[in-house]
Each structure stands twice: as structure tokens, then as C-alpha cells.
Length: 398
Image 1 (cartoon, one colour):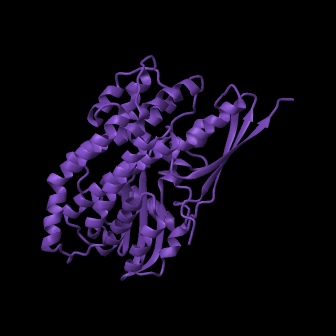
Image 2 (cartoon, one colour):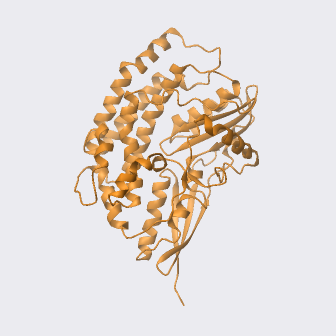
Image 3 (cartoon, helix red, strand yellow):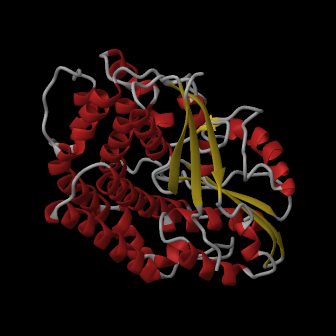
């Protein structure tokens, strides 16, 4: 079976106190969708959960949307709402897992919180797995499913939101709904103590003297209808298998994910003197803190619906994962897959000429070890899910 994740290799060229260049290469399988070609929808639906252990719900939803759109199926709004709730719980699990794994020292208490969220997601998937099955126009839920789905979208949804808020409060040092407003009021002179907040201060201390390169533009919300015509044109490039490996939006490299989403809302935080790397980390905390409220308010209901009007037998699935926007594209002949392509957030954020290269190239550091640390940190913030190896070439002036 294919290595789904692959690895990124980064080579920093450090000369006379600055990063002169950054070379990124990828071993990620750009044509993994070929595993699905020639198979039936049922066969692929069984393969997806086995291939994708991380972001498994998101990958299944992208597949469902693509297939349902290719069929011209109209999915009941209640099913879309239920799917969105499952996605939100998974995003909470994924974000917290990466924060605990990559950024803070873990102990039994913190791991117990993560295990509780995992247990919650497992129970929900066991009860509502039928929500993650491809729908047709003629498909209808039976009476038991309708009753259970009503419970999921009513009082049980509020209960889930409350449980997540209770789990996140000790890690954020406050109830999740207060976090975003509190963040706007603090500066680097403040002292605070909560497990997930320590890296905010540490990143500022480690890199306060380092100036990063210019921003790349955020990837637009591909679920918005005004972006669909551009996406239709871009997706035609999939036939050349270029768009999925090194994607561009209207000729430009883009960024997707937490910072791309909350960049504007973090301007005040940045103006208070925080380093950009602290802002990028804080964006993940904002995304995490807003999940319980989004579940409680039923935000994003129907947001998992696919784009429309691509072409006959062709479907796109677009899902907002914890790491950014995920795209699946399928071309069908009846119930059999003719072609399948997957564009993950990694390919946007780790484009060879994209976010990381733009931010690091030209950055001045006091030592080679600081340059290496800066490279590692930027790679973690750009895409925390993919393994990477980073090395440094040093060139002394003659």
C-alpha cells in the first residue's frame, strides 16, 4: 500500500549570517489517487478509512462530496449538519494532538484529555457511521436513524460542545469562548501560565530579532460560489497532474490553514509587538478555542456541501480540515472511478516556492543553530502533520 504521508526534505543554504536559499523536495505520492481508479464507489469507500488514519473524517467527507456531486445527488441538510459536527470534533482532536506532540511537554493529565476527545469521536463514529456513506437522491434515512440524528443535532450537540469546552479549559487557562478576546489584550510584557500558552512566549523570545519574508496570499474559501469558476479552470489542470503536486491560485502560491484564516483577526495581536511566529502559533489556539462555540451554535451547517456545476460525471469535494482546505476530485463512469486526484493542505503550504521558502529566504540569524531552529519551527507551523528532515549547508565568505 502507498506511503500516504511521505516526507519533506529541506536544505537550508546559510551564508554570512542569513538564509540565502531554501530547497524543499517531497517524497509524497502525488498520484495516490490512482489507487482508486477502476474501482467502484463501494470499494473506494472501504479503502479511504484504511489509507487515512489522520484526518480520516475529513478525507471521507471529501470523497463523499466528490462522489455525490458527480451523481448530482442532493444531500439532506440534516446529514450535512451531522457530518459537520463529526468534522468539528475530529478537527479538535487533530489540533490538540499536534499541539501536545510538537509544542508542549505532555503528562498523564494532558494525554487523558486527548484520549477523552478521541473516545468521544470514536463513539460518535460508531453511532453515526451511516452519515459517512455516499448518498443518492433517492436515499432516505429510516425512522431510527432520523430519531438518532435529531438527538445528535439537538441536545446532544450542546452536550458535546460543553464537554469539549470543559476539556480545553485547563489547557488554555480559561473557558474557550473567552480566549480570542483575551488574546487581543496581551503583549510580550504580560506573564501568563497555561500549558498551551507557553510556546507563544517562547517563540517570541527565541526569534524576536529575526525578520521573516513577505506574506503569501491566503487561499480563498473554495466552498464559496464566487470561487467556483476559478476552481473549475484550475481543476482542469489536474489532468496534467500538475495542480495537485505544485498548486497555484491564479498563478500565485497560496497559504491555507489556521493563520490563513485568522490573519486579519491577529493584526491587533501582532501590533502589540508579538513576533509573527507567535502569531502563527496563536492562530492554531484560536481555531481550537472556537470549535466548542461553533458546535454549540451549529455553525458551518451545510458547509460540507460540494461545489456545483463542474461537469457531467465529475465531482469536487472540499473540506476545511484542521490544517487547511482539502480537495478531492473524481471522474466517474456509472459507479466506477475513472480518475481520482487529491490535493492536500501540504501541497499549498510546502510548495517549493511557497510559504516556507518565501518566509525564510533572506532571513538573518545570529548563528547557524538558530537558522536550523527557525527552519524547523516554520515547517512545523506550516504543516504539522507531515514528517520532515532539515539540514544546513554553511558557506563561509572568502
